[in-house]
Length: 252
Image (cartoon, rainbow, N blue to C red; front, side, top):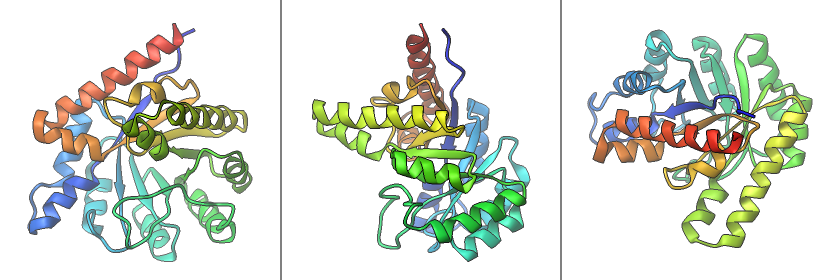
């Protein structure tokens, strides 16, 4: 049985990282977002960090105003970020953990521990018509809390799986992939839309794309890096082909 199509969200954060390394306006994240749209991205993701290390407030305003595809705003569950989301009204918000000293998001948001902080933000954004996603570890506890909070979407953190693939440890790869498969199935059983992302590349995306319950993958750093060698559009086209091929094989 053929599986439903798998959407690709392209994260443009690290286009802004390169821009900010020297200052000025080049390369422009909005230009990258438009190129991603032209290459077939189903949505654009941008993470507005509290320290503004890459995406800036003005980037969000321009993306919301000018994109044709939906914007997914990644942000920490704070009062400042909630106010920004309510002001700009992106299509979706993905709540993620954030530490100033980290280079990138290091794991899922522990919504069981931070329930009292996260739940009111989920409700407020949902009331405003913003689709809320929670970036979580592939855990039954986290999924149950997400369902209880009323979040319609979860995004499973694939970082541990990506690290296992890099290490070449077959047993660890199997364990991490099993956790993701189980979590995706459980999320779907609970009525959640399930996405996945973090650390996905040409080499490891196939096994994730083959998980039938997944509706969307969000990929950024690898695609921006690959763009140095092949161009952003070519990198996105190849990623989509790999996703579609894995999907077709899994549904055969």
